[in-house]
Image (tube, rainbow, N blue to C red; front, side, top):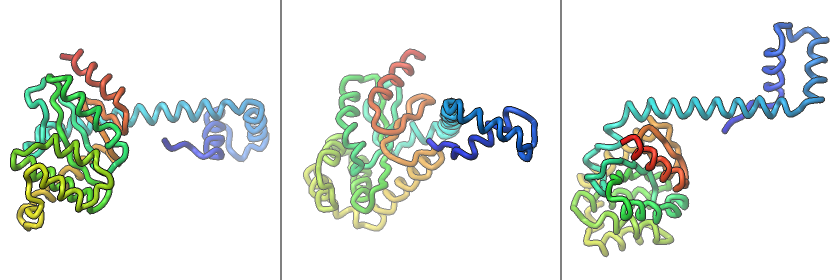
Length: 237
């Protein structure tokens, strides 16, 4: 969260206290003395600013989610676990992101324990060529009706996940990685990944993992927040 620099915060505080001109030396001296005697005022002001910024971010996210609901939840190119579930959770992730790796077991457990939870997987590679090949490979697995969750699990648990490891895992799950070198196949996968990237930009998602449920955006590795959002969505019916 960004904060005002101290001099700017002091100036803003001073302007709020009086309509006096900044050139009023006596007034400036009084403000300066007051702040020296009560430095907690700056902390309180910054806390209020942070709260305001967070509220604005939540409101902005709600608008963006509403405007992109179909792309978030109903893109037929995405793999969906528990497709008949009544509550939808969408995850944006990269297989080489350590935070995505950490939360992946929790995501898989949620799928197993909650058959009413519909989980949409958004391939969002941001960690270079190996991530892009893994994401494109997962897209290929989905297109061919393969074991997507098995591939997701293996990609998340294999370290290092380089391009050779990606190809080895794809082969183990019955998908020929050589197909990714076919221009038409790779172009289709790249279009899908580009669409996810543009969607993430529209939603102000700049890192992984990120989760969306209802009108709530949950950035980062916060399984407790995800579970709370699921409970809230269920309560709404």
